[in-house]
Structures are given as structure tokens and as C-alpha cells.
Image: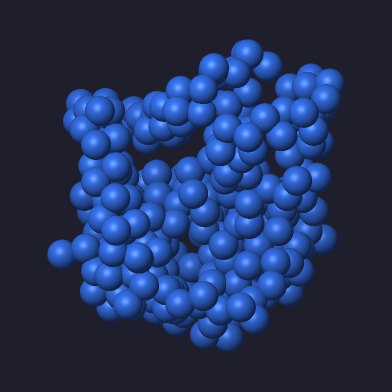
Length: 273
């Protein structure tokens, strides 16, 4: 099984696009004392975080946020560079709004070591979360990194090596023709699409392919998240209808997205109030 090296782009505090930010290897940030890796579900955050932990020449520890808070003593972690995964999972598991403060307090007790945190973008509360952690960063700075989509070369390698697609270029061209190429840019949705078309049995029309893609996208593929929401499962059709309404409004209004907090809103990203 091939695991590709991922690129990232440095995030800013606004919703405006900063064209000066370039895609760089995640390894370029090994000297940074603290960074946050953000991305969509299935984008490869955990895998990339683990790769970095294993590739580092420092004394590292890769563990979940829950393990960091509850399973490891301070003595076990002192002097290590910490790779902390799944902030979104522990936030989803509790209504306690102090999770990040608990992380901050433990980092302070450890003497403010170098640390890296992975989290779903939707569960990271922007500048307020960054501000909470800056005081335990060695230089009072936190770098936010967005995991980049898989490159075409990445996609070809994964299709060939992991899913035995003999002619990956043909698969990619079909995805482009049916308008679902973007699903190939995320490792999780790439896998979903490969399984959905059973290798090379594509739906007959573009609209059927879109329907298939949407039905796959609305599924929660993280078992931990599914476990946490087992008794409050959302109706899939209701989610699809809501997503359709939001996207319709965005398209008709000529907007690029929606801000979930008023402080992050711009003319291109209006606040959802």
C-alpha cells in the first residue's frame, strides 16, 4: 500500500484568499514549534501527522487528544515533541467546552514542548482556538496549515498501487467527464468512488454519477464520530436537501462560501445567521 507525501498551504485569519501562500511539503514545517493541521473529513490528516511523527529525528509521541489528556502522565511525555490527533473527535464526544483549555494546561505543565495538532476544519474555531494555544507555544505563535488536495500524480499512484486500477489515467478521465474529479482529491472520497463504480462500472449518465457521489459524501465514515452520534443520527435526505439549499443560495448570490462565525465573515463569505 502506497502512502503519498502531502502538501499543505499556510492558513490566514481571514476568509480572503492569499495568493502569496504556496503549497509546500508538510515536512517544511518541522522546525516550527507549533502547528495545527486542518482539513476535511478523510483528507489524510491523521496519516500525515503519523508520517511526520515517524520521520522526525526528535523524540516524538503520536497519540490522540483523549490519550494525551487521560492516559499519559506528565512524566511520560516530558521532553517529547507531541503529535496530537483527533481534536474534533473529543469535541464531538462531549459538551464540555473546555477541552482545548485542558490541552493548554497540560502543555503548560509539560514546559511548553513543541506540538502539532490535527483537527477537522469545521471543528477548529479559528482565531479563538489559536489564541488559546499561543500562550503555551515556545514563541507565542501557532501556524495553521490546510492539507492540500491530492495531486494528479498522487491520485494515479493510489489508484494503481492501492486499488489495482491498471489504467489510472482512464479512470481519472472518466471522473473528469462525469464532473466528479474533485472526489479523487481526497483519499476517503477517492476510495468511496472506486468502490461505488466497482472499479470501472460507471453510472450511465452524469446526473446519476452526481447522485451517487452525493449519497456517498453524506455518509460519516469516521467510526468514532458515528459512535458518538449513534442516538442522534441525522436524516441523510434532510442533510442533502439542506446542502442543496445552501449551495443554491451561494450560486444565485455569487458567493464563495459561508462563515460560521461573524468575525470571519467577508463579502465573499457571508455570516450564516
